[in-house]
Amino acid sequence: MDKILSVSIASYNVEKFLDQTLESCLVPEIMDKLEVIIVNDGSKDGTADVAKKYTEMAPGTFVLIDKENGGYGSTVNAGIKAATGKYFRLLDGDDWFDKDGLREFIGILEQADEDMIITRFRRVFEADGHTEERDEGENIPFVTGTFDQLPDNSWFTMHAITYRTALLKESNISITEHCFYTDQEYDLLPLRWVNTIRIAPVTVYCYRIGRGEQSVSIPGLEKHYNEQTIVLKKLYGVYSDVHKKQTVKDNYIYKYFVKRTRFQIRTYLVISKSEQHKQELVDFMNYLKAEQPDIYRDLIRQSKFVKLLVWSRFSAYGMLHGIMLKKYRY
Image (cartoon, rainbow, N blue to C red; front, side, top):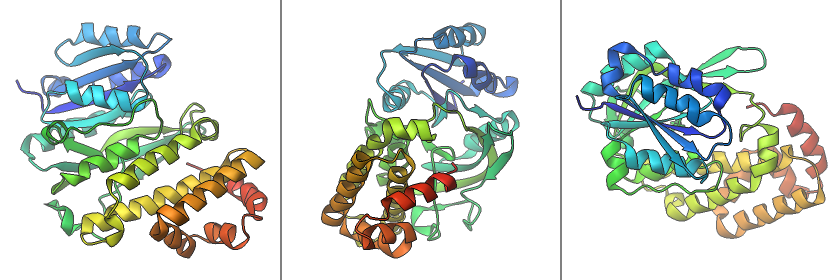
């Protein structure tokens, strides 16, 4: 039977989490329709051993790719290349699927032919176990439609997105390797070819939050903050004309840029306070002013802390660092 969904699992040193991740894909009714590609990105722990247990248990469903370390983007590229399913989505090696949701989702995908499918997801907080349901399609007034029909406030992230596999392969999508935060490239790069969208009101993805090694944790931000800038500059270049806002898609991407750029400025205010980090923030803001003036102006208009930074000529850096550090929660 042809596979309906290919799932690419980025796996780097996730031995203690991967059992839960892969077990969440063990749904007997859909095993013949599901392809789970475990991309072991040069792990130094027992990640590959856990993966092999599942490839031996269900070789028709689980596939292991062992490769040298190349970063998150390299696992996405490897997964897309290997995928044979009708649709493709990502699952991080420390997250998992809701089994009931996955079962229902496969049934939806069997009937679908849209370029992009949007599902609900659940955020699970490590500290106290509480959860938050996220529905990025809740305000969209259609089940199936086109990108140009999306409301002005639409916003989709990788935890919600599934793409038609042929679209990814035919458009030669390539995600930056040896770099963090490239899930944003996965969110945006395929949009040049996305025309049709389906909203599937089912919770599929369970997103673990609070693990210290995560790129969105403060230790993770401290280690990789400049890589966010690399990703943003690449995306600015790919979509250099979106500031003209001639289409709904342009407007969507532009708003995404403003939001992610604001997050990056906030990141400079959350990581450790130092003259080096302050200067890097100044340099980034000067880059925006010179190269992305529309984003720069909108950030000043829309964000009180960005406005204060600029108006104070960055003398408010220390005060804002303390405020943002207390408020930061992802």
